[in-house]
Every structure is written in structure tokens, then in C-alpha cells.
Image (cartoon, rainbow, N blue to C red; front, side, top):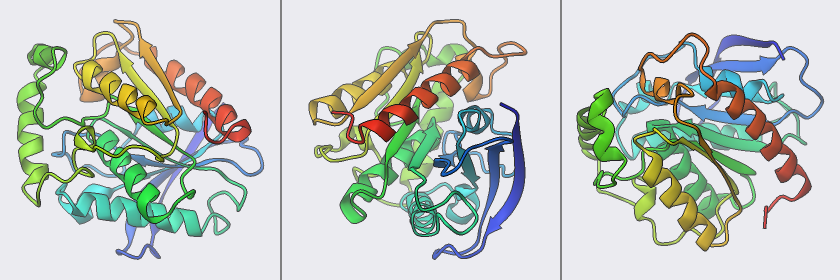
Amino acid sequence: MTVEWKDMMLDKVAIGPVSARIYQGADYGKGPPIVLYLHGGAFLDSEKNVDRPVAMSLAKSGAIVAAVDYSSLSGNLFPKALEVSFSVFTYLANKRAAGLGDRKSLLFVAGEEAGGNVAAGVALKARDQMPDALDGQVLISPLLDPFMGTSSIRKAEAIGMRQRWTEGWSHYLSGGGCHPYAAPCLCSRLAGVAPALIFTAEDDPLHDETLGYGARLKKAGVGVRQHVLPAGTGWPSIYGGKSGEAPDWQEHVSRHFGSFLQDVSVQPQLH
């Protein structure tokens, strides 16, 4: 499916206007799912209106994807980053018939790396404050563990990421304490959150904490679909590395998200 995009300002969000790049397939159907997409960047990057390959991959499944600039308003600090993202989520939940999808559209939150952390936090907060408003969460190598003690992350020096993530965690948490919304892997109460689609790869430094969080969600009774891509699919490119002209992971993300959409539509709780 050909994907088109446009830049727009979400000017009626409660926390203030938020810029977004909207991705949608040229021939998306009636009642398309809506995805709030949160970019990565180790809690340090604040680029806006740039290409988001993951967002485009999700849109190829027929979704309307709003890649929002949560960083400019929040400075990539907790809790502000979560507040901005949740405010946009609330706006999308209440305004599905006002230009993005319609009242039958399913609503998802998705994020990669640092954005995966914020997406998981949005899912937790949605469970606590807006039950049943969120239909699913898509966590793409989420950066969840500020202690960074897993075996896979100790290998991150090979692509220069461990030091960057150390700096990013220090920055993100400097705005407040280590609340479970800020470090979801430390949350002791996971039951009741939206079903999750989780991605990692065999050569992903965040492999262990990603799968560990998925296992804890399953144990809490949450429906989980997780996919471990083979090594060499170009997956480290989501951290800014160079790994070929046409990364294979994009096709995997699009295809598995399409299957997840069908699962949620037919069996909302994935239990």
C-alpha cells in the first residue's frame, strides 16, 4: 500500500498545540484504526517533522498514524513527556470523528525505544484513568529498564548505545522520581492494560528487557503477541545505525501489525 503523509498541528489538545506528521495509506478503508506513534531517540533527540520509518510501516497496514512531537513541549523529561503524550491520546480518543478516523476506529499507542517507554506509560495510565479507551499497545524495542543490567544490553557498546542510553535515562528521570509510569519494567501492577504487540530482534541490545516485559504482561493476564526478528534484518537501524538500503524489519512490522489489528477486532482482550 502506498503511504502518504502530511504535517499538521493538533491545536485543540488540552496541554497545548502539538505538531504531528500524519501517515495514512492512499486507499485505507472505512473506520481505519488510529495509532498514536511516539518516536525514539534515547530521551535526548527532539527532531520533529522528519521521516519515521516505523510509523510508515504501521500505516501500510491501513492505519492512520499520528507521529506526534512530544519532545518539544516536554523537553524529554518525565513526567512532562508522558503528560503531553497522554493529552494527545485523550484528544484522539474523544475526537475520532473530527478528521482522524471515525467513531468505530480502534485506537492504539505505539513507540520505539524511548518512545516505547512512553507508549507503555500511556497504556498504564489509560488503564488507570480511561478504562477501555485504548485497544492495544505496540512496543518496538522499548527502553524500559533504567538499571540496564541485562545480558543483551551489555553488548550495546558495539553500536555505541549503552553510554547514550545512560545519558538519556539520567536526563529523562531528572524531572521527577522513578515512578512506574517512567520505568514500566518496575511496575508491580500490570493486570488490565491493553493487549500488546511486542517487537525485538535476536541482535537487539534491548532484546532481554523487551521479552522480560512481555513475559510479565502475560503473567498478569494481558494478551501479548511478540515477535523476535532474526539477526541481520537491519533492526539496529532504529537506533540510528546504518544497516542497508532496504531494512527487512519494515515488512515484518507492517505484516504483524496487520495481524494484530485483526486479532483485536475479533477478540478484543486477546485472552
